[in-house]
Image (tube, rainbow, N blue to C red):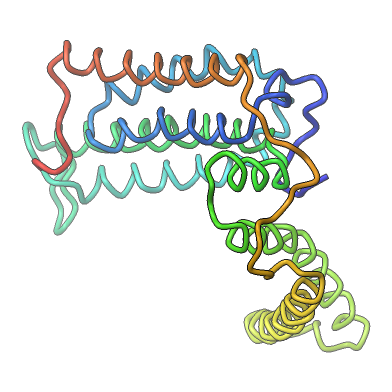
Amino acid sequence: MSLFVVDVRRSPLASVNALAKLVAALVISVPLLFSIDPVSAGVALALTLVLLPFARLRVRDLWLRLWPIVLSAVIAGAATVLYGRPSGAVYVEWGLVRISDGSIALALSIVLRVLAIAIPSVVLFATTDPTDLADALAQLARLPARFVLGALAGLRLVGLLISDWRELALARRARGVADHGRVRRFFGQAFALFVLAIRRASALATAMEARGFGAPVRRTWARTSRLRPRDGVLVLLAAAVAVASVTAAVVAGTWTFVFAL
């Protein structure tokens, strides 16, 4: 199983076409990029959380993939509270730090927007096998086969990079060169991993070329990627979430076109 895919044997999303998941994630995310307001992002996030139990995914699996994004959103929100554009009542002013109604509202909007975009994307792609996504992009979206296969091969090697990093750390520790100087050890190990990755990529490129992956002919596929009614249902649900979030913001009068700021 891929490093990025959770156990989805009980999830209804496992049988949905990968291209439909990609389209659904874009349908939810793109409208949120055009406005910075708490209402649209909050409604989208709330509806996503309501639909999330139907995915039947383990909380621990999702949290392991979401916590870096949640942490980044909190850090971005904290920085915006302290250094965002002041407006309205100012509560704290000290040097460059200004905490006001405007900075707090903007921070809340940013945090909600990051979570509203990240959570459905992580859920959809965590239930997607990279090979299924490559098949869908090449067969249904008609992307160039060489580009799709190259990206798939690179994604498959991410798990090997993590294993190589652990093996390098154990090997260096066994030789007694990993006991002191954490910073220098990190950069030395990173350079070794970089060299190893280049060698493996060169060998993989040669092997793929020898097997005809770069041949200038129409490519055949071992598995056929098809769209089914359940795929349309997922896209319609995503469209409903997007329409509801934008409508709520417009009705509440909080919709702020991002390029007008």
